[in-house]
Length: 445
Image 1 (cartoon, rainbow, N blue to C red):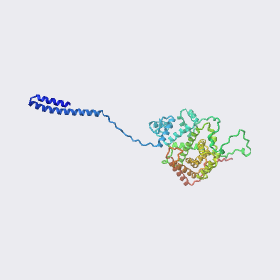
Image 2 (tube, rainbow, N blue to C red):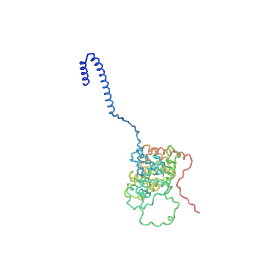
Image 3 (cartoon, rainbow, N blue to C red):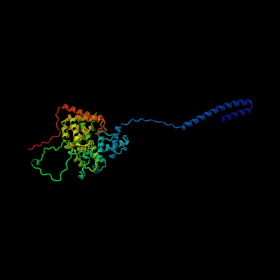
Image 4 (cartoon, helix red, strand yellow):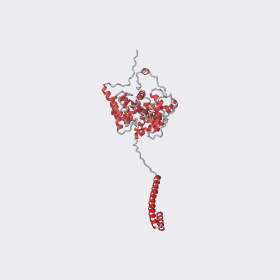
């Protein structure tokens, strides 16, 4: 509209001018005006477009690919974070992600224990951290007493457990617990196997040969598994960590490490279960669990004499005669397995492990393989141990839930390789199998 008005004014002006001048000037002016107007319009339009481009905001969406997180690995990291937080090394929320807080906390733990502060836990460092956490959680009042004794908070527990593994005394003498009512859970032990309560009347004086001391009696004692595992722990630390399937040289060393690791898990599981019992003292648990010794004596003795299937079948017959439900026996056996290892009573530990295996929890059969391979609580029979190892490993490979170090996916392969490797080496040596525990002999002049 504005351009049309300008054009009409120009035409009107040419009418008023002389003909020659008007036509020439009009022609030049009109062409110049049209060209100038077009250029000006282009400049205005380009300026407007430039302003629009400046006002527009460009949004770029960037997609970042994140690899899926392995659930087993996440659970392992979550365990580490929980344990680190408990011992005073802040790892943040246990989310299973190894972030900066987790690495910093791991480095603090390593520095506290005298390890290289890398922020990434070696296998033996992780196993010590996790087992210490479960032990502290399941020890109840003993944990509080030890924390107060050490004076470093929960961090002091780590040094206490390390010192104990090295054979350094840790616990102060605790007062004798007050008597309490009989344990309700121990009713799962067959009544024929219960330890009778001591009579209030004094026992009659022994006469004749019964009054003589018997220095040759073994009293059911044998080599100390606790002491053995302390030595194994020191060797593991000096070697820089646990033997793996890739680094294994001596299969027996690997089996000993896994034996002591399984013992630690068994103690922790049983103590966790026992902590839920009300009105039951440690002394009562020990007294009740010692009932496994006479009840399972024949089955434990058969370990070094009979094949695995025969032993398991006989124990299943014992279970049927007990009159107790499998769930009751299994719960009691797990608690008593923990007690047996904690008080270093191999008869109680073996009897409990045999019951669990016969009740269908086949991964516990690994323990019989370890005992037969090293001679704790039984005659050393590596040839018979192999079937127990194989049964436990195959059960896990078929889908049974691992009971020892469940987060270590390579453990079954290590056990299989170490057991067969050790058996082959011993079979080729030609040496006869000898019992580890022998009766003492005194020479009297």
